[in-house]
Length: 129
Image (cartoon, rainbow, N blue to C red):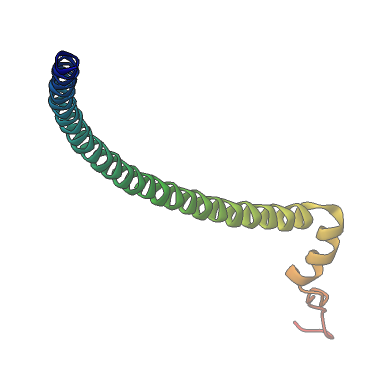
């Protein structure tokens, strides 16, 4: 019976040693795994910082482009308004000129430009030597 107990104890000791070795190896694997996770966290942090910087830069550039476009649109609008005013001024001037040159306009303007009183004439009065 003693030999059976000794055999069981030896087997248990081997199992315990094997479990201890496995435990050490698992601890080493966990340490390596944790180190990899820490490095990945650092890489992730750097990447997210870069993404945030890019986002900020992109928003700033987008705002500058938007302001430039709005400024250009205002300039074009101002120029169109000036051109429209000139166009209407030219249209009005042409309308007035075409009215003045037309036969109806001539009939209306001629009395204003000429003296409606009859021309003065000299008549001889009696005998003058």
